[in-house]
Length: 139
Image 1 (cartoon, rainbow, N blue to C red):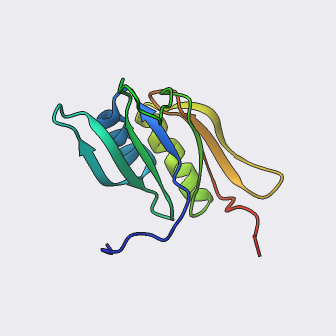
Image 2 (spheres, helix red, strand yellow):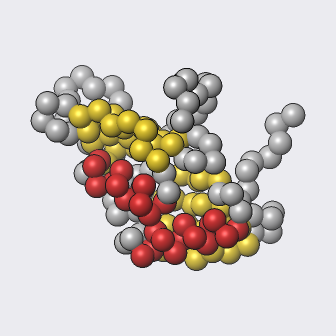
């Protein structure tokens, strides 16, 4: 693991009803890696970062009622797409996540644009799609 920060990039964010439980789910069921989790004096995770091994990551924290807090999300309203290594990786994530309690929305399928995808709801109701489509070339 490198000691340098990643280059500038987009970090999807979400709030959780139980941040610790959702982090543990994302690590065990989806395959994220916990990078850091900062908790307040009360033990509540205020900020956490999870790395997606093929690239990118996710920031999250516990839902909390903090007067003047400018950044708020309603738990269970996030939707994200994570690019997998290949079709087998998509299938592996789907099977592991369902076994861990994720609700299947769409079992692995092939799209007409060449991706192999699946869609799941995590334990808090956030929708996740995993697939092989890396996005359209930008250059």
